Amino acid sequence: MEQGFDLTVRRGRIVTDDAIIEGDVGIRDGRIAAIAAKLPPGTRDVDAAGRWVLPGGIDSHCHVEQLSGMGVMSADDFYSATVSAAFGGTTTIIPFAAQHRGTSIPEVVRDYAERARTKAVIDYGFHLILANPDEPTLARDLPDAIRGGISSLKVYMTYDSLKLDDYQLLDVLELAREQGALVMVHAENNDIIKWLAKRLLERGHTAPKFHAVAHDPLAEAEAANRAITFSRLLDAPILIVHVAGGDTVELIRGARHLGAHVLAESCPQYLFLTAEDLDRAGLEGAKFCCSPPPRDAGSQESVWQGFLDGTLQTYSSDHAPYRFDKTGKLPKGEQTTFKDMANGVPGLELRMPLLFSEGVLKGRMDIHQFVRLTASNHADLYGLAPRKGRIAIGADADLAIWNPDRETRIAHADLHDEVGYTPYEGRVIKGWPEVVVSRGRVVVENNVLHAERGSGQYLRRGSPRFEWPQPRAGASRRPAGLVARALASDKSA
Ligand code: URP
Ligand code: ZN
Ligand code: ZN
Image (tube, rainbow, N blue to C red; front, side):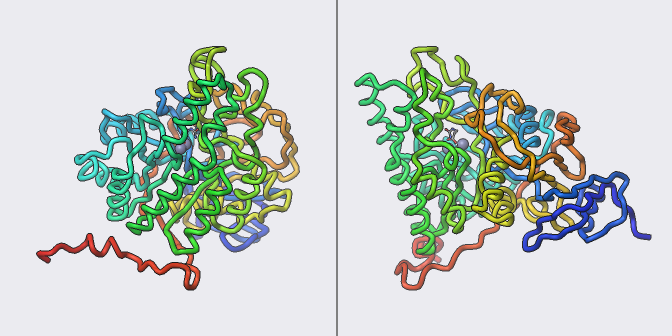
């Protein structure tokens, strides 16, 4: 006899990879068991009439319970971050287990695993932040971590305490290619930023708006170009995170036309904020200081186009939550300069609602593009497919049920993070994920959380799944695998 469902989501507009189905989703044992126009009732039913039924989001770039490069602890722990994510329709996060110089990868991984285990309410994996690629780390610890399900790592080209030099970047890219891991790159030229910042401060330019001057778009573009060059040299896949500037979008597009194995991400702050937001009274602009900083309307437009034409594959929050006080943005109170403040903006909860409102409902992107950018591309690139990121038979029943008509005036008081402000305060958006389901559990409904602390599961991730565009005819004369082939053989072989 056909088993019944634990939960049936009824009469929704269900978005799968290639179709929109008006009907029901049947859920059993935490997984999607059936999708059809009409299914039998479950032990419990949720009515989704007039609603979109979408995969729960995957946020593959967020900083949780993490010490920043400047040594500042983020305001959200694994409980508040995952609760906040769930209320915004995200059912999986991939934050960082962050190495700082002097700590080893195994101890870092153990530490973050333990912090998350007792607090997370939705599922999570980890990327590594690699700050010390020494011999034992590259030979032993990194391969072990990758085999253990941490199949991506982030490297920094800026921040004195985190940055890798070019030689180290090449070491890491070579190893990642051999091990089938994806390298995420924070691409900004450290010396350009330091040089500009020093001169700005000497001239008394201390206000938050000078953060955007010091982090010039060319500092981003130069580093991105260098990372792309290294990736091409070694045929090693990279993903450039938090792309902000129009020049960088162009570089990535051009590199992909040449057949480079280059992927990219951008974030709400680069679609919905500009450098002008940093120029607010007093130190208010600090609430908008992230790295790279928001740019101008032209760059916003480039990022939109990059998402629409496939140059950029993932839309993440880069949630980097720092309070507007001595513990975060204002370590020196009123005397804080743009160089002292922790970099980062919050965005876990509003990431998807902002794009749903301004992208889907305003007709800039279709619902399939939205799903790819917020969920399925993350699952493919970070080794979570086919379990996560799609509404498909056998996948985890991670769903967000969106009311497209609900209008919200954004107020931090209604959000669930511990940051104390949002850069989007007062904006009016349409559409909200009113019911959120994680592995078949209704975790958010009627604006109430129904998930226990520690009920999220750790996700051991597999290899990334890439699909590279064909190089444009005649675009590159560089044969694939040139250096990799030479390095794969030695004279005695
Ligand atoms: O300003 C930002 N993005 N802070 C978070 C750390 C990072 O580089 O992603
Ligand atoms: Zn970064
Ligand atoms: Zn980040």
